[in-house]
Length: 91
Image (cartoon, rainbow, N blue to C red; front, side):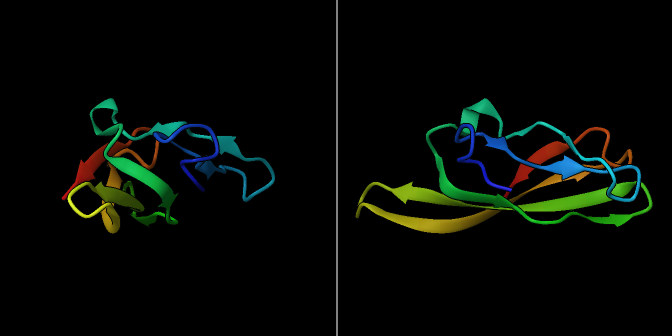
């Protein structure tokens, strides 16, 4: 699951509802206001669920202009409806 497969903002995240027989891309996007801040590598980790509430961590890099380096950071997507919709959070 990587954000640099299509764009810097799209995450390749798939879900299954039939035990893994078929998979569907759920089209998660890092919000547009973070474009240019988030740089590859950007990966979504497997989500954890407690009934309908789920959290999926996202790791990414941030370019530090002052010394031209990159730092690893973490954000997350959260769902309250079993993964039908996701909200992006960054700390």
